[in-house]
Image (cartoon, rainbow, N blue to C red; front, side, top):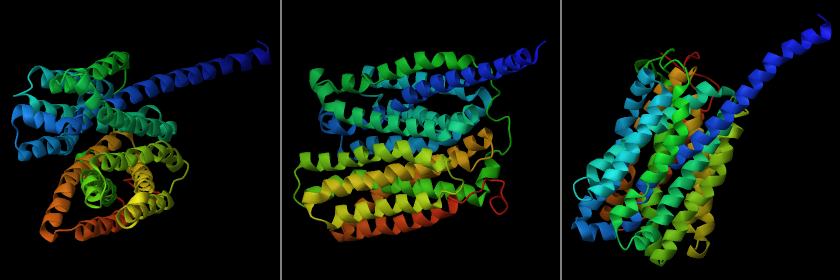
Length: 412
């Protein structure tokens, strides 16, 4: 055989491997985007039609508050379950099952609008929690060299889904002739579409994600894991607190309800940019402390401007706050992959961080509301958020160091 022919034969397997890798990247990217688009509409479609639901179902204000809190609480409760399912059945199959459960719960919420509202909302949030945990670990396992790109796409689609769910709720309500069950039930259709697209992924012959090192017990004993969890938890707490209370704050300063809603929408619009780009920037360096300082600093500046600057400039400052929050959330999720030594560890770390994060997040709006009621103003509630921002910075700087769970000093 001639030398040229030998080299050609050697290049063929490599070319096939590259083509297979590109094909997997394309299919995985499409799947991740579709799944991520379904992670928020089930939740964000609720608040815009709360008044109509309250009237039709004769719900008290407390009951409406519970409906709003149940999803975030369920995110925290169900996150550890995701790790067990992922290890036992594999991530791709568990994700498909979660989409099926999500679609079923959303359909039940429409078909049985009275009795199914609370349990179906909790079940749908549980399915979303499972998908949130497993998507990041699956990205690390299947495309370890492109985690930044895929995580950026994931977060971008997450933000788009949240915005569409909120913005489309009232138009859907009006188009359905004032039927809130139809308005909420329509979101089962995107879940079914995502499931149909995702089903071919379940035939992949991959070992269950737990076939590696580090169980949940090891993660919970790691100081580094707690630093990542604290960073994510404090970011979630501050995000949900500002999302819940900035509209009331702006209205107290003279904004109309419509203006207050538009101002708060700038949080999501600003977050789109950094949610997409920050994970890619993070992957280019082993140490992300500078990115943490920049992201948290932008958050602090945006919050300070939103609170202290004239109302006429509030859109600028809330947009800046959104930029910072999108970047910080991107970093927090990236840490669940980068600080883990394997996909198996990533599942455990992601489950822990999201469990702690969302359980913390449920306390934020409540604490801000209690402080506001106790003091009759906004000074102390926002002082609390600034204090927690400083603690978040400290946790992020520790979590942003170039180390993994098995680095010296990172694990017990």
